[in-house]
Amino acid sequence: MSKQVFFTVEKNFYQTKVEMKDFAKASRELKIGIAKETFPHENRVALVPHSVHNLVARGHHILVESGAGERSNFSDHNYSEAGAEICYSPKEVLQADIVLKVAPPNLDELQYFHPNQILISPLYLPVANTEYIQALRQKRVTALAMEYLQAEDGSFPLVRVMSEIAGLAVIHTAAELLTNTHKGRGVLLGGISGVPPAKVLILGAGVVAEYATRAALALGASVRIFDDEIHKLTRIQSRIGAPLYTSSLNPVSLLQQLVSAEVVIGAIHSKTGRTPIVVTEDMVMQMKPGSVIIDVSVDQGGCFETSQITTHESPTRVVHGVIHYGVPNIASKVSRTASIAISNIITPILQKAGDTGSIEEILYQNKGLRNGIYTYKGCLTNEYLSKHLNLKYTNLDLLLTSTL
Image (cartoon, rainbow, N blue to C red; front, side):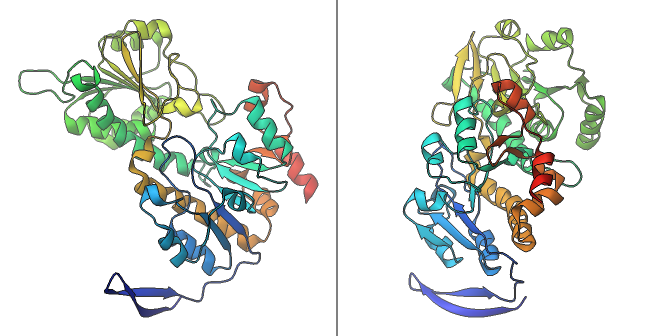
């Protein structure tokens, strides 16, 4: 790859402009649409300009709806300079071969879709009702859920990077919600000399828990972590590098800690379907008035019986005197960082699809991508959704084998 340096004049200043050359051309041109998000207070964008530049250089056609990147501080000019075509109608973007979104398309957007399209977006289980799935099936769209895409080592890359962001963000959010301004208990998370710190319970010992623990300990809070998988508790203790209070998720021990906790964070991720409920409504009723619940698992149904999805505009609900925070797109609060992270994960997938020349071929070869598919050309291929919505299930491997 070679570089040539040019000078362009912008706002009366001379700036260097780097031209990238000699990318290997893909064997098939992909038409990729980046839609402006309509989900309430979703500020992220699926591809950032440097990824667009990369794909355009390989011969792909990128359509970006005007304003798609503004809330992440990427202008239309940034995208056009990267080689994208700016569109002023969502219809044109949503009819591309591959449509990228960081929130599920709504039913109005789905009317623009057509057979054999690829949709890559998250699958919010509370939003995925029968009407929504049937609309995807009728359009014969192949839909991939970002959060279920797996890497070769079995990990979930997008979940991990968003979990890192969420883990750090929830502690700052909890600290603010505990204040009198938000009708919390008026407790400083870290405490001061002579005053004990707040008690933070974390349900789950994955990536969210790890980063939340780091942030909470840095602020001086007292942390307790619950998980049924003991190896995860061992791992998080090793990574934190300090003795921690850890416990299995048995109801007796959990309730003992819940009644005295100021903050409870739900950070349980399900690999297949809905997150299990581990805190019942009766248990919530026994918590301190003004304490805080943050359910990071809410996009998979939530691990608290009292959880419901909320938005950044109205992020909290008070249930039985306990403040509930149920925003599914926590990372949207730091949209630029989150957008770059998403783009870094999606771009290599698109490159491989272009190099292979067939979407079906890359799905057939890549088990991790297949794990993300929940509808395929009119068939529902996610077993959990099939049982949950009482819809017919079709094995994806059989469908792919029959088309090759």
